[in-house]
Image (tube, rainbow, N blue to C red; front, side, top):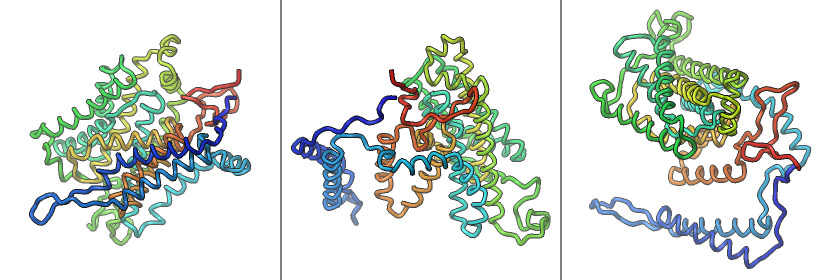
Amino acid sequence: MANESEPAKPLDLPAAVKEAAIAALVALGLFMLLIGIRTDQGPTGALVFTTRFGALAAIVAAVFVATLIRATLLRGAGISVARLLPASVSTAASALTGYAAAAFLVFALIVPIVFYGNRYLLDLAILIATYTMLGFGLNIVVGLAGLLDLGYVAFYAVGAYSYALIAHYLGLSFWICLPLAGILAAFAGLLLGFPVLRLRGDYLAIVTLGFGEIIRLILLNWQNFTGGPNGVSAIPRPSFFGLPFNPSEHGFAATFGLAYSPTHRVVFLYYLILALALLTNWVTLRLRRLPIGRAWEALREDEVACRALGVNTTTTKLTAFAMGAMFGGFAGAFFATRQGFISPESFTFAESALVLAIVVLGGMGSQLGVAIAATVMLGGFELFREFDQYRMLVFGGAMVAIVIYRPRGLVATRTPSVSLRDHKDIPAAIVRDARTETAA
């Protein structure tokens, strides 16, 4: 098996100092206008320059020291977390990986019980579950089929507006509008799939990005139907089998003999999005074992070889876009009924970028990795909310570090869809560019 890390180079102190100095100069150029100089609006309305050279010097010094340490102590060798841990710890961690998903699921089920009195944490849990479901849907397109989609927010928007408009104009309930929203989003996925059948790589990413912007502009400018920038308000809330969450005598609380509390609706919404996310996860795992799932993975590995083996790449791509879009539509319908108001400003490219970052950082093709990445990223955003000025800087650096030192994502194992006898995970140490290398 090929060695994972290159041997360390001999110590060259002048070269290390030169490398650290160059890194410090690059950091100075990057952060001079971002951190060193700040513009604020003065009392007269004119711009006032505020300097923060102390913070700038601290960042540049930290870059210099970190680069010097890397060049002298590590001597150019790659940083491997596995090498820093004892063999016994690595073995125990590998053995516990199989229980991580079960523990994660149990924790997700008891979140409303543990944090029932904390509305803020319940809303955060709903947000995490929503983006986890979006990550599962995009994971079909990007992680399994290998099709880079930068416009996934378009299907999210189609699902949200489908539910809002159908409920507004036709007066149908949430449970009837939910599958309709998924079907319409899947149809939008087919519309996107046909023009990009011959595209791949960067060209595919650009077209999908344009599709997302087209959908947003349509929603923004078609004012007679979508409300334009004013959005759609007074969206109906879901009920518990016809029991509304209100203080009336026919409400949920009165029917079950409970004291009315607005938290009941929040808990119900949490379990609803959790059920949708688990359904998406289950369907995705089942599809991976079917011929279409194996065709997606074959398309991801090598499209030319996939064609040579007789796989219909047209059908394979279209089904990947349609299935991923359908789950995005389900998430969009839930988002609309949870918020009660939607507008085009909720479906910008930043949403697509966030969901794509969750899939990539979690590990493309890994369902558990998507759930962990969504929890870490969204929970981390809230944790660092007090440090608003430096929050994006910290998370940007964290994502760069993960991409460099964990290129396969947080969960870097790959489980074969089909195995002859006992299936085994392929360790990240022998995975290179989604292929395995063995010794000659």
